[in-house]
Image 1 (cartoon, rainbow, N blue to C red):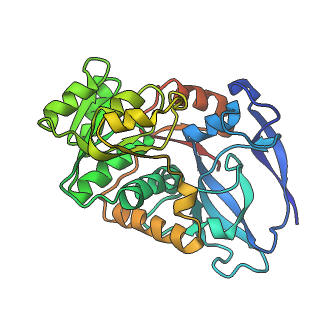
Image 2: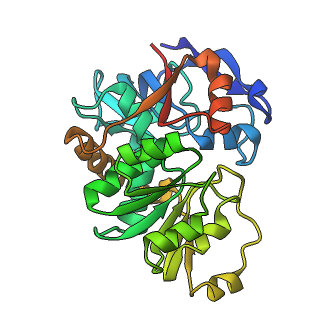
Amino acid sequence: MSSLVKAIRIAENGGPEVLELVDVEVPPPADNEITIRQHAAGLNFIDIYFRSGLYKHPLPHGLGFEAAGVVTAVGKAVTRFKVGDRVAYGQSPLGAYAQARNVPAAQVVSIPKGVSFEDAAAMMLKGLTVQYLFRQTYRLQGGETMLFHAAAGGVGLIACQWAKALGVKLIGTASSQEKAELALANGAWKVIDYSKENVVERVLELTKGKKCPVVYDGVGKDTWNASLDCIEPRGLMVSFGNASGPVEGVSLATLAAKGSLYVTRPVLGIHVNTPEKMQAAADDLFALVTKKKIKMRIDQRYPLEQAAEAQIALAGRKTTGATIFTLD
């Protein structure tokens, strides 16, 4: 039986004003789907990319990739879940900004009792991002000194805690002393306030001239050149986001001149492209959460009707930690 729920949709690409709160119909799940009554959904920079049109998707469409809730219906071919299960996802078809929706069961994971719906919604995309960055893209062994941009953001604070749990010295960057202190409180080894300090010079000082074997950069255009200058010869540049705009005009000759550097532009979906890989990555994350080695910091909560305000705050770098939409 179909039901009507509130959801955010866009009919055209543009600024925050294109976000519309509408009633949408949730039909019975298809054979390979489950219906989730969602308690919370996460906000991420990728949502802004799809709203603006930087990332293309046929219009009209919803927004959002991560949420958590309870299974209310199960498709005929689904065997992994049953009605009443607590579940979450961080890599779904667009449309997480909704009170309820149908999601392919293959893209959903079970969440343990020790993880709340709000924490799960805030951590799935961000936490699985850190998982694939630290455990798959460049598998940190412990003892490394590495650079992570935007260390006080939603992904950054998880990265700080995960790095500490691994015995890795994370050098973070932040735009203010307040954000620098937040990253330090969450496990960063050192934090560079780039509003006052030169990132490359400080990395050289902190590493005694050795630089870093890996740099994780989710900022993009504004930090690209500085990031390359912080990598040791034959080190790896991991460019995983475009918060300041996409990186363009990449020169292979520059990579050679700066030390035979490697560059990768990874995405989550390729790293968790089966239900088994998705659940394994989530279990890796949840284990650290239940052991209290990673604690989610949710500093902003918005109702769905304030989705525009939430995206404006995120784009303006006015937020710390994670932002969620409360859907109850």
